[in-house]
Length: 181
Image 1 (cartoon, rainbow, N blue to C red):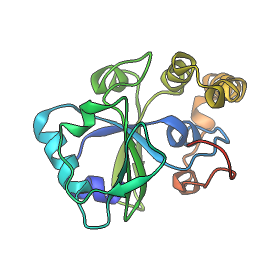
Image 2: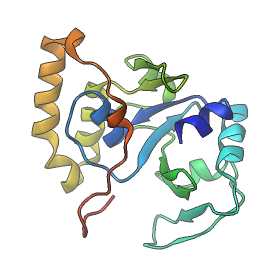
Image 3: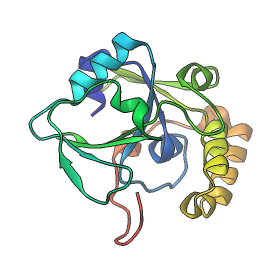
Image 4: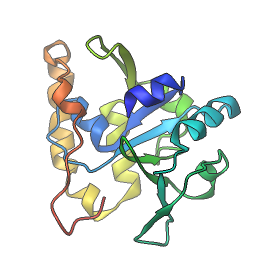
């Protein structure tokens, strides 16, 4: 997924569970959440990257993914978040991170990781911003995880240089059956 986004020169910040996991938490998630730069040209590139004969989209009021081979930039603004299944896995797109704001607000505190073995650089929302978004969203699945996120944030604040990014953190796990993603 990250390679596909890089190939299309999409600017984005990783948020949500993968963002938390990249910063040392044991967070389990079934998808990659991103907040893209809302520049129209960037959103055009993101839409082009997602457009594929195998892409499906889930409407906010549905539990089913439906074929969606052509993605348009305006879709990213139509719902709180847009959920897609792609050849590379599931991707949720938010134009704003609750409690934090848009891409520019996230980037003020974001961490950059150079994944030299992949030839990529990625930006990840700070753990503090991810926590703020979970607090603001107030969903039960997020609130349950807050103590773990608080503990990880404290650890990261005490020992910021001891954390080494593991490529294993980029693996998206499937959550236990019966849980929402």
